[in-house]
Length: 299
Image (cartoon, rainbow, N blue to C red; front, side, top):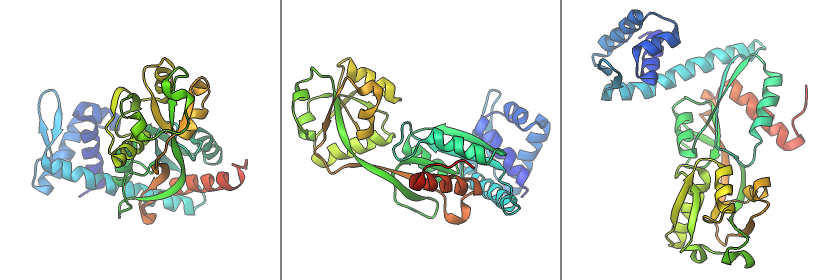
C-alpha cells in the first residue's frame, strides 16, 4: 500500500468528487481514478459508490478513512520532527478552536507563533468542542482549544487551561435584573438564547440544568457570541454564559447575575498522544506556557 494511494483516497473522500480532488492534488483525473482503483484491488473492497454527479463512501471506505487520516498525520508529524531536529520548523499547524474560548488569546498566540516560525503554514478552524475533539483524535487537527467533552483516551489527551463559573445575562428591564444570584430553578420558565448543542457554553449550561432536574427552552439558537448578546440586549431572552462573556463591550448594557450551580466552564487544549503530537503543536503549546507565565516575549 503506497502513501500516495492513501493521499488520493482521502482527497476524493473529502471532496466527494474525482475532478475536484484531481484539481486540488494537481494530478490527472485518470491517474487519480487509477490510484483509487489500485487501492480497492489491494484491499479487495470497493471504497466509493460512484454516480455521474458525486461519489460517496462505502462502509469499507468509511472504515479506511479513519485509519488513512491517522496514518497520513503520523507521516507528516515524522517529517516535521526530522526538520525540527535539523533546526527548522516547517509544515502545517492545523488548529481548531471554539469562538471566544477562555484561557487563551488565540489571535495573539498565533501572531507570536508566526513571528517565530514563518515557514509554518497556519490553518484555523472554528467549531463546537465535540467536533474539534473528534478532529484531533482522527489526526485532522494538530490540537484544539475547546471545552472538555470526554475523558482522555489513547487517541486524545487534554491539558487544562482555565475554569470559571457561569453567569446569567439579561436585559435591565427583566424581572430578575434587580435580584441576586439565580438558580436553574429560578430560570425554569424563561426563554433562552444559546449556542448550538455542541458548543462548550451550551454543553455546560445543559449539564447544570440537567443536574438540577430543570427543563429549559432554547428559543433562539445562534453560532456567534455577538448575535447572542444582541438578542439578549433586545429583550428576546436570557442567556447563561461563561463569566468572561459578560465583560465584553457589547454586554456593557446587560445585567450579569451569578448562577447558583457547581457547573464550571472548563477549557482545555485537546492534543493527540505525546508520540503523535507534531513539532508545530509542541511549539505552540510552549508559547502558550510562556505567555501564561511571563507574557509572550519577542525574539
